[in-house]
Length: 141
Image (cartoon, rainbow, N blue to C red; front, side):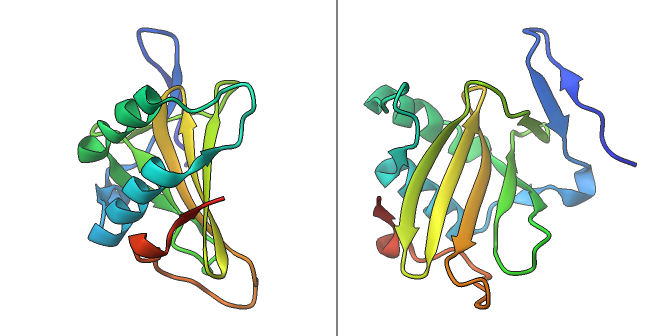
């Protein structure tokens, strides 16, 4: 049964992740997340990244957990949840931080000012990349 979005006291909508699909981030996931936060570039011309944005999002990392995995079987992409298992629904305020690594693009989605999805998109769809890259191999676009 699909999970129903929840509305918090501010009116923002979040999707709950079932407890059996939540876990701590692996070391590699955490390292990739931090590398993209530090070096990723914004995809929005109307939202230039400020150091305060990066600091605010970086402060969320210790409380961020892994949620649902991508179902493609070719990548390690994961939904990101807060400590209560909630992921904000995407909306008009979405910011995407972009980076690259040999053979793949990396994207970090931020919705409603909360980390929401960590994606690795292999450039060659025939080659599976099942782990996030070493943080030293993550570069700004």
